[in-house]
Image 1 (tube, one colour):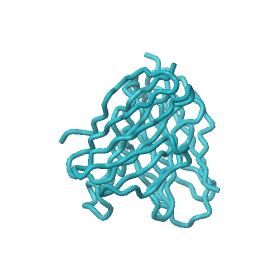
Image 2 (cartoon, one colour):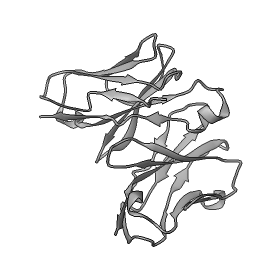
Image 3 (tube, helix red, strand yellow):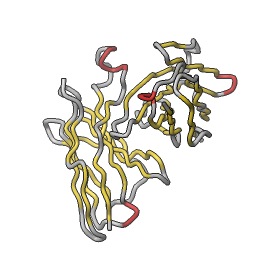
Image 4 (tube, helix red, strand yellow):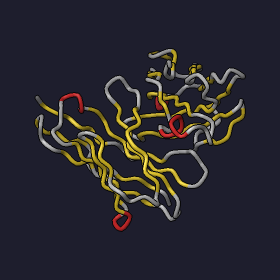
Length: 114
Length: 119
């Protein structure tokens, strides 16, 4: 079975705090891709990152960083020095094989308070 | 370049009616997929079209249908609406597989969605 679990339904922090969003996935495929998308109140899903199963290197992009660990089937997302504009729902997703259908987590609503 | 455009943004229907939603992909993108987003079920894949052909279909009843035109614009239709069809319907476009790395890195480019309320 293929599944993505985002156990944190909602997280609320004060601006400038660091925050980590958890993502745990399940798949038996050896080749797969993991994604993070951001959904602001406007509704549009914005692509943040894609990771393939053969690349466990952590990635940093400005205040965003991602920790991919195959040993724990996790692909966690950290925002450092959070800002109010980071408030959104964040989705983790999984794609396997040649099928472009994405399997989505339930999303984590992130609230950054000023 | 212009993003994915979905129309209408908001609409209200009553049970039993039908609805048609439209999606214009990013220029040059030939793949269009549709997703339904509800608080209870989250994001669920409806179907994907490429070059006017349905490539993949999610687990939805036959009341949900779609099509793609020669200009890559896509429509989805829901007939005999039910209360549970109330949702945000998102359309996403993607460059042809094998396209240039930059164009393909983002995988799916989403529109802002059509929010359907069924009363």
